[in-house]
Image 1 (cartoon, rainbow, N blue to C red):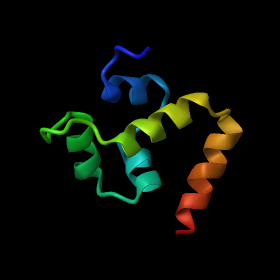
Image 2: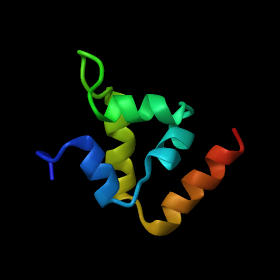
Image 3: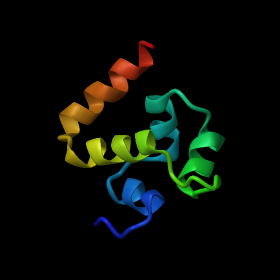
Image 4: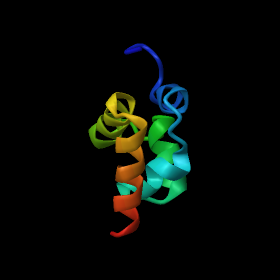
Length: 72
């Protein structure tokens, strides 16, 4: 899955831009731009790390992460 664009990886893992934005504490439009490589530096490392973490988590772990981010 390494060669798939990050936007596709997130979607394939069931991670919406809205949820990713909530988890990262960013505006949804910012996450959209980050995933599309809007900036010359490409997709930020922390965004990639969040997507990889989501891919590796169980559904229960994902729910816990989302629930905990609501408390921030």
